[in-house]
Length: 336
Image (cartoon, rainbow, N blue to C red; front, side, top):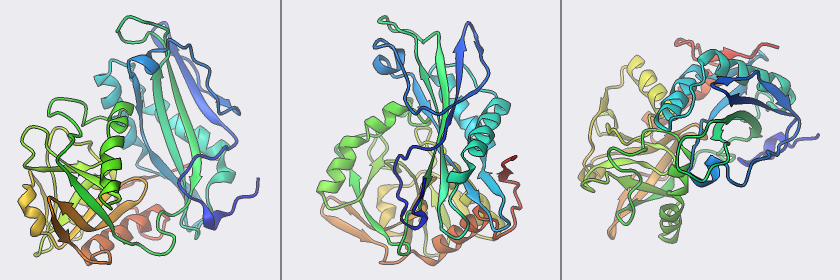
């Protein structure tokens, strides 16, 4: 298959294979590579009716030395088990998770975008309950699937800020709900707020805490990070925020390079105090926010990515592509 590497987007594309593990009778079976990207389920499958579905997202990169490496796979394994535990789904050992990731990337190695294209192989592990049932209870059988798809750089013509709408009309997650885990239902619930944000002329939705509507939580698919006038990296601390592996990595890089970091509640009034704002996530690393719209007021942060966020973005992507030292041991080499 001929791929136009320079014009890849972020969308599904059939590749050579995906890997699947079946859980039944209290244990996981061995992984098997499938060349078919369809899945047969009962019409009464638990995941279709009661939402037992969790997933992750990570990337593999062709590095400067020609080797293919995956970014922080053990961290994704840990976060997936946080989700499965909350939904009463069976745990997936780190060994099994890494085995699956390595096997599927290896089998689809020809789909990893070449070094210099700015692309990556996006890796999507997903676990779904498959038992046919009408009564509400945890499934007895599950499928753990890891699929991959080549994706291009989000910013094909340079990093450009986007606008965000601060949502008061919807809540993303309740304080003791499921906001801290990566499950399918959270993202279905974000569709209407995102549609509203776009109707307001903005690309993304920014949510407040559900209890008081006073504190910044996160964007629809990304963590919030703000840079103060004195150069401090500030990100919200809340039990209902998904712990972004990208954000945690940026925090590590910031601290290593002498940038002060604060993880704390952020009152919405502080939006006027930030000089840079970004949305942190796997797909983009950092999306700079140029403007936040809230109740007739615009909080503006510039038409270009700010210097602190740009420094951190360059550090992170440099590690991804093997252009900078991997001091934290984040990159896992794919065994060929």
